[in-house]
Length: 63
Image 1: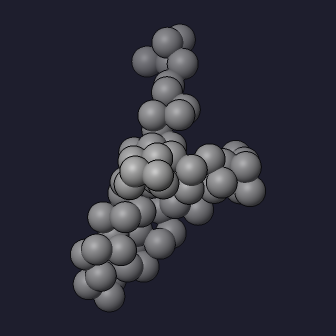
Image 2: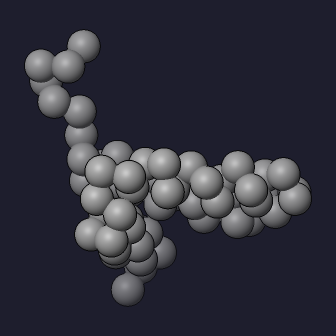
């Protein structure tokens, strides 16, 4: 499994577990890890956020 595939799998798991609260769930570790200076952790969660966004593109009706 490639790193990209792992992030997609993680994003799917977050979506499955947290549903409508997935965005808030993803934002939480980004904030917490940034506060303690864990750049690698922040980057990992930003990659998960990007994968989540890829899997959930905005509706074309939303502007």
